[in-house]
Length: 72
Image (cartoon, rainbow, N blue to C red):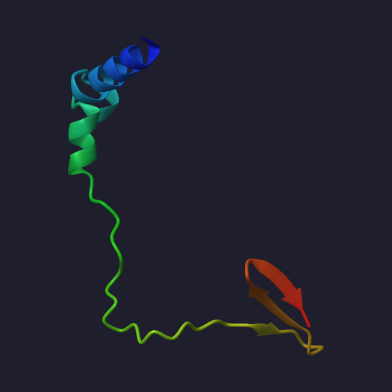
């Protein structure tokens, strides 16, 4: 019962009700008009991942591996 009410509300909110913040458009229409993100041109990608590690003035190296920072 609750799920049916929530589905009805979501459909009404996104597809029927006009919004002031969207200049009177419905959210579904505004969403469809918005440009979507897409991958960048991959023609220059040669399959090799590059990373830049930093070495400070004392020779200490900082690098990120597997989401963690390492200091050598």
